[in-house]
Amino acid sequence: MSARILDGRAVASRLWRDLSDRVADLRERSGAAPRLAIVRFDDRGPSAVYAGSVARAARSVGVEPHEVTPPSGVSLTDLAGRIGALNRDPSVAGIVIAQPLPAHLDPSTVVALIDPAKDVDGATPLNAGRIARGERTFVPATALAVMAILRNYEVQIAGRRAVVVGRSAVVGRPVAALLVAADATVVICHRRTRNLAREVRRAEILVVAAGSPGLVRAEMVNRSAVVIDCGINTTPDGIVGDVDFGSVRPVVAAITPVPGGVGPVTTMMLLEQTVDAAERQAAEFEPALDRYALPAASESIRPPAAR
Ligand code: ADP
Image 1 (cartoon, rainbow, N blue to C red):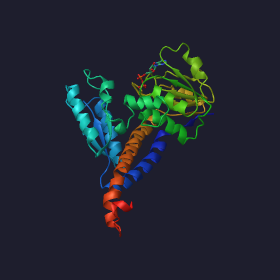
Image 2 (image 1 turned 30 degrees about the horizontal axis):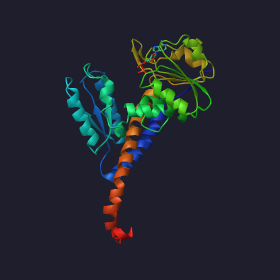
Image 3 (image 1 turned 180 degrees about the horizontal axis):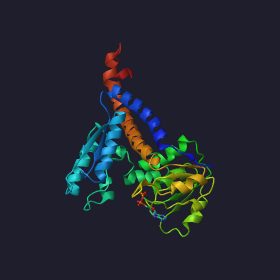
Image 4 (image 1 turned 180 degrees about the vertical axis):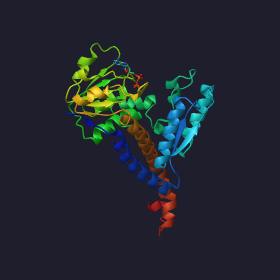
């Protein structure tokens, strides 16, 4: 028997419909599309490719992308000014910074400049801390995509043994924290893990984010495993994940393909969090509208003392 395919494109298209509706509502209420600022530093490389694909996806749900392209030699002070302006701009709902940054800029210093309330890719240290504490906040989109796929396919998490391969700040660590928050028992593996195969074989839920093509092979997994592959590796054979799909698929319960698994859902998670941010910002804006604008349109205008 072959594994159930966890189809990221199908999940993404369902999310796309929900998001498009929510953006349409927001536009109706505020008269403007929510904007997502995308800060990027090159015209051609991976940061531009990422920015381009996020911008296209944003437009497709009605979110307006706002690409900000500082010169690659920009100083930290100058960049802080530019990001500060985005933080203060009420028309900007969310901010993402496309990686990689130019070598002279420290990524964690730069992402810390984002207002945590607009940090729709969960990149700031404040939001990382909240995630580690099990609090509700913005989460790195890939980590959230893993949870969205599990949820969509109604995979039971509570009480189950989850193994995460990889401990990066953008995927492994936050995924592990989210799984713990969902009551899984979690093991995190990394480069220094002594016997990766032994750990991986015990996984009921296996999340792989190691950036290493074909790292997980058939003999390492067990039959009941649900496998979520976050890897995106460019090889002579095309884009492949960290799991050897061809050999693993026949022996596990369920698996995400690459491409067409975690990737498309990740983009939707970034947009979903952008729409969350926009709705929250709109809600904070509303009470003043209620107080000053709406009573004027109603029949009686009560004096402040009567309130
Ligand atoms: P990603 O962006 O997918 O999280 P990174 O390159 O930032 O990828 O991180 C790779 C992570 O995967 C690291 O935590 C590293 O320890 C882990 N890793 C890489 N190769 C192996 C391996 N062969 N076995 C176990 N863990 C690995």
